[in-house]
Amino acid sequence: MKISDSFNWQKSTKDDGHYFFGYYDRCPWNADNSKHLVLKAGQCERLPVRGETAEIGYIDRNTFDYVKLAETRAWCHQQGAMQQWLKHKNDTFIYNDYDESQGRLVAKIYEIGKGITGNYDLPIYAMSPDGKWGASLNFCRIPRRGYSYADAVLEEDNQPDLDTDGIFLVNMHSGKAQLLVSYRQIIARHPVPFDLEDMYQWLNHIIFNCDSSKLLFLFRHCKDKSTPAWHTNMYTVNLDGSGLACTLPQFYWNGMISHQVWGRTPNEILIDANWRKAGSEYLVYDDSVRPLEATRISKGMGPMGHLIFSPDGKWMLADTYPQDNLQLLSLVDVATGEFNVIGKFRHKQPKDYPVDVRCDLHPRWSADGSIITVDSIHSGKRQVYMLEF
Image (cartoon, rainbow, N blue to C red; front, side, top):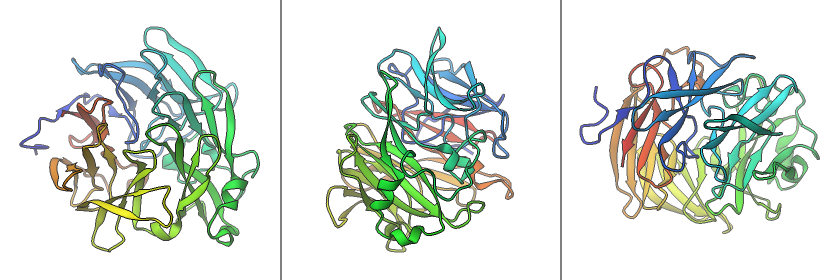
């Protein structure tokens, strides 16, 4: 089965392993688009176990050769090792790893041609578009293990230390880290604080906005962390710690939103929402306006999925979760809301696969908007596919 009759998708990785990048809210390419970061895993049938490693390397854009650079114990099938290129150092990237000598997670710095040249004391979850800031959180609190690491052993207490744990801001130049917002501050802004009684609580999905002035994150809680059916409240905060607010509470989620990401302006947030029970629509709203006032970009394709604007804001990529063993990828014209299916990817996994081992497309743009890549099991193994746009 061909991915598309009209668009020239290329499989940029080989069949000697499972290759993938991970999440959709970050760029996998270096500054000149010659190297695409990837992980190479030995298996895609179960969650990683303690001590299990994956390779980290890059794909040469011209030859599609894979170059192995390092290995990591801090990886998962959904988000990789949070590998990202540094803006202030040429051909240098970071990735999360477990430092066995210290018994904790760190972010390592790798320079092409030199190897590991340093590390950050905290694992990095996200990096600001200007490259100056990183954000970190406690991976040991995430009960959804497919979005954490095997060596980040799950904490048992329902609450962490309310004053010393939370969202951390890391200076990517100096490495200095500081607590930006604590759990106590987050709980104080919760719209329904009594909903947290006897609940396991954690943070997840940090994303910086387009001008690196704010970040969003999810505060989640569940009754039973072994089978987490969670409530979600989305917060935003300025990088100086001011303006902390729960701008998208559980009422709006409630099984009707699957993903969130910043949009084209500093206060715009993009979501897929099935509020009208007619399928997921692609909506934006201004985070500074209360109450929420949503604007529809597109009626959408129906299923939930990942959305991301092109760097120039004129286009949007939208994928879907698998339906009838197919995942769709569409290109949305932001001005009209019309979408064009640019790829149909086979997605067939055994029914007993852990849900968080699934292979989402996670569509990603290059920084100049000229290249699109996705992760897919279209050919049977997890691979990276590329389209020059």
